[in-house]
Image (cartoon, rainbow, N blue to C red; front, side, top):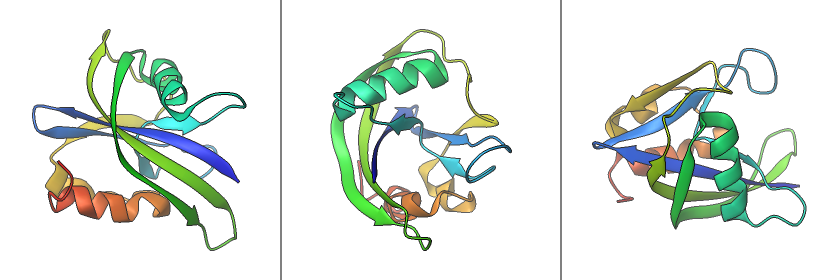
Length: 130
């Protein structure tokens, strides 16, 4: 089982979503930026590192939004931790994704998100998480 930290970046009422590359696992599906926690790393440090690697920003990690375990139909298990990221330094640059988009939360269900993210996406779209 792996642990993944992901950030929900908010700006001007919109949320950043990222499309996975066409090569690799879950091609062209959408997700929130972040990645796998490395040995000896806490989830906030992981998220800060991943956002630097993927988006070239220095993020201020905010409060936890949601944390849960998810098991994919093939039996793969993942621990997920999502955090608000309301501020960052540096000019954002896509360094890891097919594309990145800022979208209105109500539009989130229109995108093909990773299966593990879908309940959180629905909550964000309904305005249940502020």
